[in-house]
Length: 631
Image (cartoon, rainbow, N blue to C red; front, side):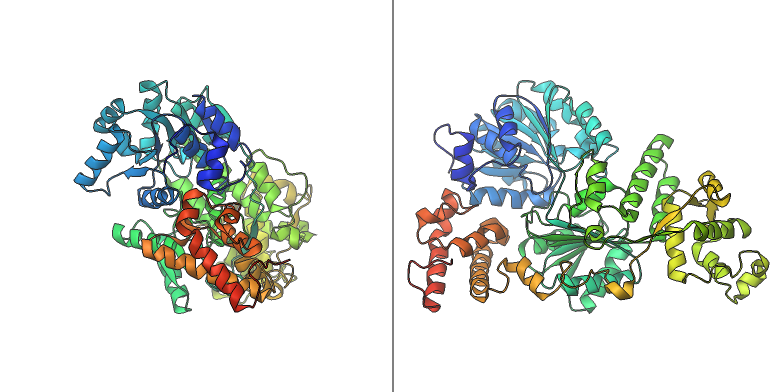
């Protein structure tokens, strides 16, 4: 149901999308595009980017063309628009020839409000000719960071999208991304010809996400502990660096009784499609994936994103963790990493065929990621600072805020660790060096004569795990590097000289005891997001209120049934925020239901009576009068 007459953006927001007011810069962005101006929008996942081009496409005459690299997700995006009563379609290689022709004819005939197009299809001469015959309201370039060769999701086809401006300079363009550091942002502007575009940079802060980093110690067991303590029955994503890691982690979780599905580029396309569809449409699915999965995921109720390996950059980490908690409800970002991760990623960079400038940038980004992991400050402040944003106060919702990290004077330990590297010839890894420091009776140590060096046995005041922490932090601080050309031995850098000479103090973070925090690095009960009551609060939002929780489950069951009838993800019917407001406010008629967030006119007409009936049945079962509402 497209509005018959021009309507104001606010009217469309309320009547079609069911939201009372715009958030942040949405209204200014929409006004800019409606007026015909270009815009570059950096807005965090869940911040409402889609509205910034959907509403202008409804106001301006013609069809809004949305460029998206996500063929597998276009169907879900179009389904969601159909639920709002909007005329939407997609055009990509998944369509049969006859289906594609019908969409093309519909475009020329002006039958769509929005058309999603894959970049390779859009850039074909056939489609460009169709655009010449059509009335285009705007071009929206979603996931615009894909244009950047410095970015983490580079798509070569995106580089050619400046053609849109060259061929149709009068049609406004809006480029959108959830994250881009300064270098990536600059390249987006240059490659897309957005020099005159107004830039709208929203806060990168996602206050509902709790950030947590743990040091690896049987990481899959740590992950299992985290899931069982805090995310029983929740949907989430587990990222692994390699395909092998994905397969082994999936098998491990399945053996523990969890519903886990793999996703990586080595799987058949149909398997990837089926697994992604199951993740989007079902509850309680854990997707174990490489970074090939996730960009543009619209599922709002992902309650956690876990990393079993160190991400390559803060930008990539932010993008991936941003897939959690899109609905604004509490979510977790959990990361396990260790010294081996640093070695692996640095090897990837140094062994690549990229030019030296690119390698320097990638090393800088990796070092920033290590700094995030090793910080003793508020993690959110470090994360925001990377994107040029300052937060005056610690967030109170990350592990370093909830349990402030203790530091210790590690100067003498650092000197011993560095000296041991030097005395053994700078060609051995951390595990061997630790055995030397601990004075282990090891035939290999004796064969090299390292039982006679001055550092043999001088480190018995620390445990093996504590020495691992020391070496990890020395690498992260740039005092030690890894010989990637050889066998991964640790080597001293120039920065280590002042420490060895006693001219520089070294303060180290004291890693929390795994025994004291639980295998998953969980903070004490009541201070983290763990515990049964906290899980109930996250799931229903009505902690300790059994009556409200039972209604919540009734409404979720109704939503699921309606979604299954139409082969849709449940969140396309109503999001969790909408269900919570239904439980909280208990509307008694369709007019009162119009005040519930996320229920526009079409959804109210389609589903209103069914949900009102569920509310009434619940009230009757509990003996409440017809006009009863919770206090």
